[in-house]
Length: 79
Image 1: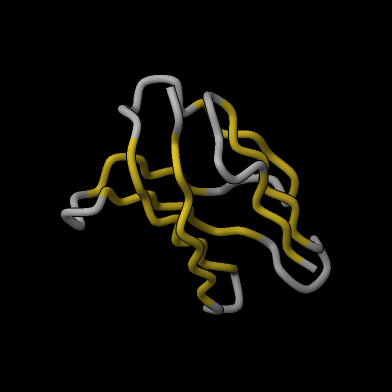
Image 2 (image 1 turned 90 degrees about the horizontal axis):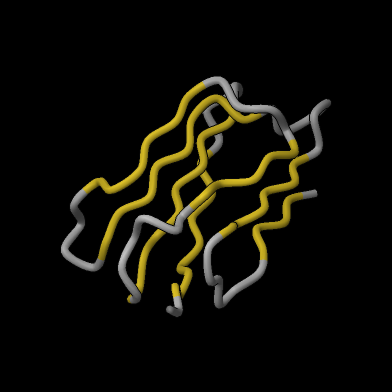
């Protein structure tokens, strides 16, 4: 099971993955121009991301699991 919420987000984005099947190895967030704006490795299966430093707009969350499975989700940051 995976959850990335809330969407739209103001400052804090939460991620919940099933640790036994979807341990997170990396999270990347890119902006609409495909520029990396956030990159974090070795994350717990349930974590929060402080996105308060990012401007309002559309972003893409790319989560890679330790099994090499990729999840993508579009998010909207509101300010």
